[in-house]
Amino acid sequence: MKKTILGLAMLGFSASAFAGGVLTNTNQSVAFIRMITRGAMIDSDSPYSNPAGLGFLKKDGIYVSFSWQNAYQERNIDATFPLFPEENNHRFYKGTASAPIIPSLFFTYKKGPWAISAYGGVVGGGGEASYSKGLPMFDSMVMAGIAANPTVQGLMKATGTASASELYNMNTSMKGRQFIYAFQAGVTYKATDWLSLYAGARMNYFTGGYKGHVTATAKPELMQNPVIQQAAAANPSLAALANQPLVDLRLDVDQKGWGVAPVIGADVKLGKWNVGLKYEFKANLNIENDTKENSDPNGALAAYSDGVNTPSDVPALFSAAVAYEILPTLRASVEYHHFYDKNAEMANDKQKTLTRGTNEYQVGVEWDAHKYVTLSAGYQRTDYGLSDEFQYDTSFFCDSYSIGLGGVIHLSERMKVNVGYFWTHYHDYTKKFTNYNNTTLPGENVYSRHNKVFGASIDYRF
Picture (tube, rainbow, N blue to C red):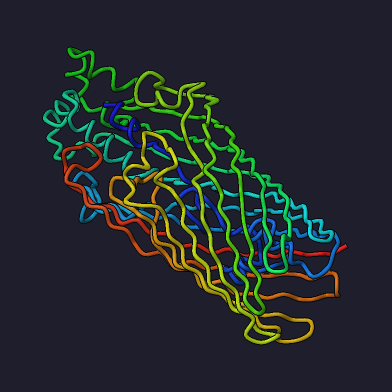
C-alpha cells in the first residue's frame, strides 16, 4: 500500500511561479510590477528585461537598482472522493505559498557604445508552499489502502462499523520550498545608431526541499473494545494495531543543483519606436538529494533517497516587445513571451504531458503626470499548455490574467523610487478521475489560486 501513497504523488512540490512559465519567474523588478511590459523599455531594470537596450542609455555612468518584493499566494483544492466521510464526500484543502522578501539587484556601467551589466535575483520558485492538513492525493490513497486491508475489514465486521474511516485517526502535512537564484552578466554593444546587441550568460542555483508525513493509527478507544481484545488474543496482526501505525511515511530532504544558460538580445530604435528581442537558452539543471529522513527509501520514497539526482531544467524563453512614444510624456508597449516548457526535462518526463509551451501576452503604459511623478499600469495574460496528466496536487497551474499598477517618484535627476502592486486572477482547473489517485474509485479535484505581489525599489545613477 505504501508504494501507492507517495510514489507517484511527489513529482515536484512547486512553491509558485508568480509570473512567467511553469518553472520561471519574470517579475524580477518593481518596474515590472507596476507596468509589466519591460522588454522594450530602457531603464535601470534592463539588465534582465532588455539588456540589449542598454546601448541606448542617454547618459554614461553607473546605474544601480535594488528591488524588494513581497508575494503571497493561496493554492486551494476542492476535492470529492467517495471515501471522504464529510458531507457529499467533499473536502477543501487550503495551501499557502509566501515569500516575504524577494530581492533583486541590477547593475550597469555605460561608456560610449559599450555597456557592462549584471543582474541577481530569484528566477524560479521563490517561496514555501504549506498544506497543514495534507493533500487529497495522500488522504485518498491512505483511506483506500486501509479499507482494503484484511485486518481492517475484520475489525469492521467484528464491530459492525460501516466505514473504515471510523476505526482510525489520520494525520498528514506537507511543506515544499523552491528557490532558483540567478546571477547574470553580459556585454552590450551599440553597433549603429539604430541597433544594439547583447551577449551574456546566467548561472542558476537551485535550493529547495520537502518535509512531510502521513500517519494513520487505530483509535485508542477501539482497542479497548472487549470484542476486539478477545479477537486480538488469537490474531497477532490485530493485536499489533495497538502498538504500531497502519501507515507511517515520513520525509525530510533538502535539494540543490545548478546550471548555466547563455542569453542573447537585440534592440532596434527607430525614432519613437523601440523593439526589444531576447532569447534565454535552456539551463540543464539536475537537483541532488540531501536526505535527513526517509521512512521508505527502497519503496514509495525511493526518488528521495540520499544522493539521487532529478532533472529540473529551466526552460528556454523567447521574448519580443515593441514600445512607442505617443507623446513626450506618454509611452505604451506590447510584449510576447514563449517558454519552451516541453523541451525542459522534468522528473519522470512530466514535460511530455504538456500540450505545448507557455504563451504570455502583455500590454503596458506609463504617463509622466508631473515632473516628479510617473504613473503606470499593465496587463498580462498567461496561457499554459496544460493537461490532466500534468496536474498534480503537489504541482498544479491555472491559466490567468494579471494587472499591475504603480508609479515612479523622481527624487532627483539621479535618484528615483518605484512602487507597484501586482494582482492575478486564476481560472479554476477541474480534473475528473475515473481512477482517483490509483484507488479504483472515481473523484474530482478543482484547483484554484489567488495571488498578490507588492514591491518597492530604489534606482540611482552615479
